[in-house]
Structures are given as C-alpha cells and as structure tokens.
Image (cartoon, rainbow, N blue to C red; front, side, top):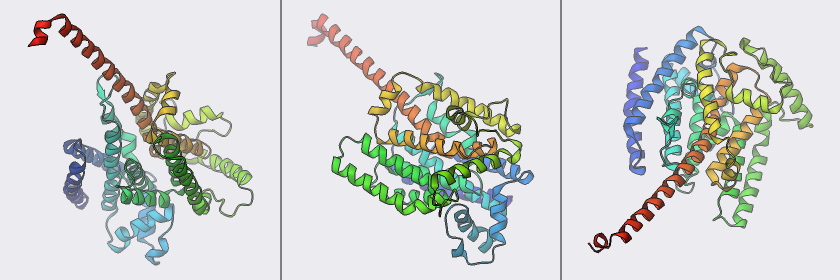
Length: 408
C-alpha cells in the first residue's frame, strides 16, 4: 500500500506537467480544479480496491491471468479483453508490480479521461450553468461518484473512458488534434469495437448534418469513407456478439441477445427480466435504474441517488423546443445525441443485470449530459443577449431624453 501511495504522489507531479501543457492552449483550464479532481478520483481507487478485496472483481482476474501467463507478450495483442491483458502484462508479469499498484496506474488512466472530459465540455460550452439554481453544472458532472468508481480500476472501464474522451475532444479541431483523434480511436476500437462503430457513425452523421460550411461533395466523401471503415471492421464488431462467421446475422443476433439477457439476468442476484419489456421501459432501465427500491446492496443505494440526479437532469430537455434545437444544432451536439441513442439501444438488448448496467452506462451518459448542458447553455446565452439588447435600448432612450448628458 505504501508503494501505491508513493506512486499516486509521483503521478500527481506528472499531472502538473500535463496541466501546464493544456494551460498554454486553453486559458480557461483550472489547475486547482483538476488537482482536486485527481485526489477525489483517488478516493474511488481506494474504494474500489477495498471493494475488490471482499468481492468478485474482473480486475483480480486480469491481474492473475496476466501474472501467470507464460506465452509471448505480443500473442496477447487483440481486441476486447485480450487488449486489457496486453496492457496489463508488462506491469503484472514483466515488472511484477503488486495488484494495488497496478490499480493505481489504471485509475490514473481513468483520471486522464476526466481531464479530456473537462476540456470537451468547457471548450465547447463556455457559458456557466447552475443546476437547481445554485450548483455549477460542470462541477457536478465532473464529480459524479459512479463515473469515478468504474474508471478507477484495472479493466476496460478506465481505458475506454480515456479513449472516448480523447476522441470527442479532438473532434473540435480534427486537423490540429489528429494525433489525439487517432490514439483515442485506436483505444476505443481495441477495447470495444462496437462502441468504436457507434462513435464513427455518430461523428459521421454529426459532421454531415451539422456543419453547413461543408460542401455536398465532402459530405458524400465522408459518408463513403465511413462505410468503408465500417466494412473493414465488421468482423471485429460482429465477433463481439459471436457472429463473426454468421450466415444469418439477424436471427443469430436475436438468439444471442435472448441467451445473453437470460444469462446476465441470473448473474450476481441483481437481474431484471428485460426480455419482455417494451423498448421505452428497457431504455429507462438502462439509463435510470436502480432507483432505491431495486438497488442491489449499499453500492446500489448510492448509485440510485445518482440515477435520480440523472433523471432530474434529463427532465431539463423535456421541452417542446428540444427537437428543433437538435435539428439546428452543430456537429458535436448531433454526434453526442446519436452516439448516446445508438449505444443505449444496443445495450438494452443484452443488459439484464443492474450491476453490469451500472458499469456499462458510464460510457454513454456523458453524451446525454453534453446535449443537456449545451441546450441549457444556449437558452441562457439567448437570455443574456436579450437582456443586453434591452439595456442598450434603455441606455439609448435615457441618453436621448437627457441631451446634456449626451453632449458631455
């Protein structure tokens, strides 16, 4: 444990260099806030580590499997679970680092994802929004407990979170941030190929429908390129659901989702029978459950409180003008909305365990929050412009009624 704490402090110093890099490029970057966020994230590293000591955890399986592995390191290179083995192997096998130390390293990887989350929101939405009239919306989003818990351990959660947030941050200026975009894309693809597909489709649709400056020819070219990329990765995507060599993808997928749903519903004693749920209830379950009455354990109660917050945040867009807002919104908003819906729809067909749902949805909820935040910020910005115009008119009226003041 002493070694893990020492490493956490060393990484805190490394963070200062990263902060300096981004501070030069973004004047809004808050070093004190990011330092607070880092030590807050470490609380969840310690929480997850303690939880894993007394409960089943994929992190322990990753550690044991890679530590006992006697094959060639490069043989571990691949997608999904094997990619995490590939990353963990040098730490657990070559360097023989203790489990708790490896957990710190992966928790730090997850924390880097929060840096890019902060940049993504703050750069694209400079208007400050208060939630419930007193709480900074962005502050709340950055400190959501469930997001930190599932990104603070050895596993897919921390790695893919970093990849996703690097990807969306780079989309603001893809030409200047091409390296960040490529690295983020590779991380997503290697951890969850199907999520990479959703990101590509979402970004493509957002680019083609939300950017009015782009010519029709460029949009057609982007569409063709997107289809070509999806064609190249189709085997990897289908292999995630064991359909790599299927001759009847539709029926085989239905069989897979049924068996997968039944299997997950029996896992860990927190299953919900979603097979016969109508689609709206499935989506509600994925987004907002557990909600106290069906919470699996103490962790479930904490998540229930956070899910209630998610529900209250979502109510902010339950307005008549939201559809028109989406139609006229820019590429990043449309991309976020598409990725959120596509991923949610896909997950609802295979998720029937509340414990797994709590973990999996941490990948997609920030896309919803970005849409809600942007929607509220735009309304606030229009209110500010309206107030400024009224004040300008009032000032002009007063000056015209007082020529002495005007002459001075």
